[in-house]
Structures are given as C-alpha cells and as structure tokens.
Length: 498
Image (cartoon, rainbow, N blue to C red; front, side, top):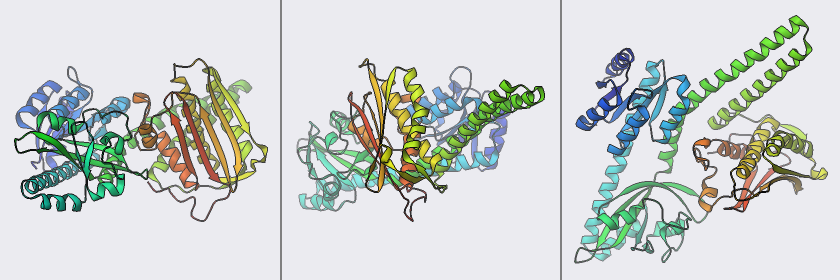
C-alpha cells in the first residue's frame, strides 16, 4: 500500500503544519485548500488516507467525507475539528470516518491516528484478499466435480448458504447449521436476521441482478441468541447455459476484528467527549462557587442556597460522566453498600417522575415494603436504572399513536434477588432492535442517541451479578425486568466482560 496522504484545510498555516508533521512520519503528502479541489485531486490520484478539516467554505469536511466514501469506501478519512465542533465530529463517525482529532493538533495524537488508519486499511485488504481467494477456490471447485464442491462446502470455517431468487435457503453447510439450525426453506432474513422483510441493499438480490460478487458487513443472530459481526460475500451459481439459478452467500466471522475497530474508533470520541463535557461542567461549577463566595461575603442566604444547588448539580453530572467513561473502559470496581430496596426505588422514581409528569405521562409506583435490603453500589445501580427508566419515558414521548401513556415501576423480592420491573406503553421494539439494543453505539433514536446509555447500563447490571430481560413488540410498549442478587458473590464487582 502506497504511503501517501492527502491533507485538506482552508487555513494555509494549519495546512503547512500538518504537511510538515506527516512528512516527518515518512509519508508522501499532497495538500488541497478546499473540499472541491481535494475531491478532484483524490479522483485523479487516489489516496489510502485523507486528513481533512471539518469546517471549510463550499464543500465542507462532512461533504468531502461522503463524496470520498462514495467514490472509494475503503479510503480512511481522519477529521480535524475544533473543541466546539463535537456534534459534527460525531456526525462524521456515522459517515464512517476513521477517527477525529482536535485542534490544536498534537503530533503524537496525529501519528497514532494515522498509523491506526493504515493498520485498519491493511486489515481490510487482507480480509478482501482472503475472500477473493476463497471465492476463486469455490468457483474452481464448482467447475470441477460435485463431490469436491460438497467437501469444501461442508468443511469451510465460514457460514455458507445457497439461496434462490425468492431468498429461500436451499442448502447450507455444517457450520451454518451448527449456529443457525436447519434453515432450508426459510428466507435468509428470517433465519439469521430475524426480520420480516428482506434487508435493504441485499447482496444476494444484487448478485441475481448483475451477476457480480458483492460484499457487505452485517450483524447476525444465532439460534441461541449470540450475535456475530460477519463479512458477507456473494457469488453467482450458474447453470450450463450461464443463467444464474442460485447465489452462494459466504459469511466470515469478524466479530473480534470489529470489536477492536470499535474500540479504536471510539477512543477519539471519548477523548473529545471528556474534554468538551468537563469544560462545560467546570463552567457551571465556577458559577456556583461564585454565588457561594458572594453569598458568604454579603450574608445572602438565598444566594448561598442557589450556589450550593448548582455545585451539587454539577458534581453529580461530573460523577455520572466519569462513571460512564470508567465503565466503558472496564477498570472500575464497585463500592458496595447495603441499602433498603424500597427506599432506593423511591429515590429512583423521584428522579424520573417529574420529567414524565411534565410530558403528561402517568408514572405508577408499585413498591413492596417486604423487598428487604440489597447489597449494591448505589451510585452505579442508580445510573443504570435511571437510564432504563428514562428510556421508558422517551419511548412514550416518541409514540404519537396513543393519547394516554404510562410508565409503571415496580419492585419486589424474588428468592435471593430483588426484581426491578419497568413497563411502558410507548413505541415498543421489533425483534432486530431488541437483539441489538445493548450493543455499543447501536441506537434506535437516530441523531438523538449516542448508543452508549443502554450498553453501559447493561454492563453495570452485569457487574452486580444481575441480568436484564426485555419483552417488547412494536406499538405495544416494552418491559424491562432487571434482577439483582440481594447479596454479592465473590466474583461480583469485577469489570463485566464485553
């Protein structure tokens, strides 16, 4: 792979600094002063990596990113942004930017980001070459004898299925059956996507239409509920007259690779989020401390109370943000306390109920006094359960199909555990959403969600030795059943496995 990089920035000084930095790392650097010039240069010369500013006149960094990805999806694009452009930076990640770094650009951070992008591109190329090799091998075997084809088909470490034009599975290999069961006669999207209709831009359908091989990355669910990131490659199967009768779909498990990529990609997001979020919270703290200082000096009780309320609010928000980051990093142990379950539930309800009432949502409490005591980290469990309660309220807010909405929060003992039951009659979820809801960066809220809340809440409950069961149907609402042991075991409190 050629070690050349295209640098785009409308500010000559920054463009020159980036060029010097990157050239010192041993790369051949080409520069462009705006998005349109950069895209024209990209189409002529091609670059494995592009480093671009986000805010530029004319074609900005986001438009350039989308144009480059449409021209060559394998190109890695690193976004350069100011601290005030966090939303644009997050938006760029959704358009498959490799990373983003903030101004002023740190040379070490830039080097790490570029090296990571090259490693990712090399990994993708290796996977592509592997699939091309496998595709050629399968085609050769198909042109040889049925016996050789069947041996390869059954022995492959990948998930392989053969589908007809109706997307019905006509044959599958041993590994496919091991994970997804006997699926002959089922539609592919039902067998391992649990959908009721074909997937958008289905690669099998595309191969039937143009006769070419197609690749797409997807998440599939096995018969025992496990999820796998797979790289799907399709290949046409032709009869003696050259007509496509079936399509072979070969899915390679790249779950570990994808998890690593998600970790690397989210590192920039975490850094940016911390710096931007803490800056705002510290500003709030300064305001509260000022009110306290002037309240003492003027002996103004109202000002003292107002300042103290602001300080408590800001400290609470800082604690919540730090807890989320620590749990995502999986390096924080719980601070156990024994609390009365009903009183703890009342505290949770007191946080969420005002927001529900404000939106005309009935909030129902059903707490059993006999719930007893429970050993938890109150701050952590509070964050997890409030997150789920807030999701229930948002599900009602987002549901225009009903006039009356409610959230019911109940707590009861169940053997050696306490069960927190949260029900709503909001929008509900389909099966695909239910299976992905605890996945990092998965959000059903579009641009309003980060995909971190339920993922972190799930991690927190698991660290307590508990579990979450979800029952939901579109339009019928959702029920979360959170079960937490009353007493911790020796292994609980250790960071939850991802």
